[in-house]
Image (cartoon, rainbow, N blue to C red; front, side, top):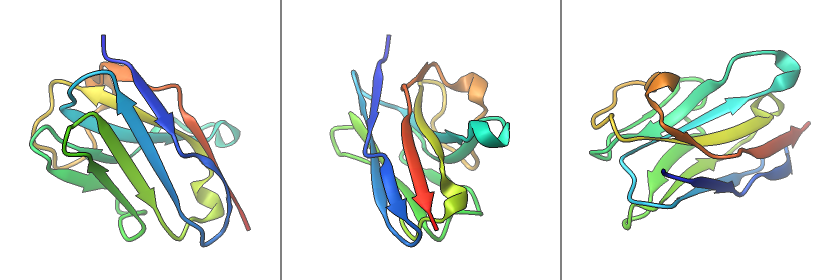
Length: 125
């Protein structure tokens, strides 16, 4: 079973940048990035994803600041986050799906077969 380990979270001031990485135990196809802020009692929100064919999608609210990528060996995915704002504060999770090739949106949570433990991102004003 695929195992995922996120890294790169931390605390930054508004306007700062972070790079989140997700190391997989095997060759990856679709990788997604989600975030959840328990304090807001919202469901896990899809932020960005890269498909098995390397197509990418980033939600409109962060599209100008976040970007998703993957290393050529396809074992590690990244989420580059720039101009961070306090509303970006959340636990960020990466997820793996073997069932999604081309993406034009964030695939449903149910299509992801493995999840990382999460990495906390805290942005102060």
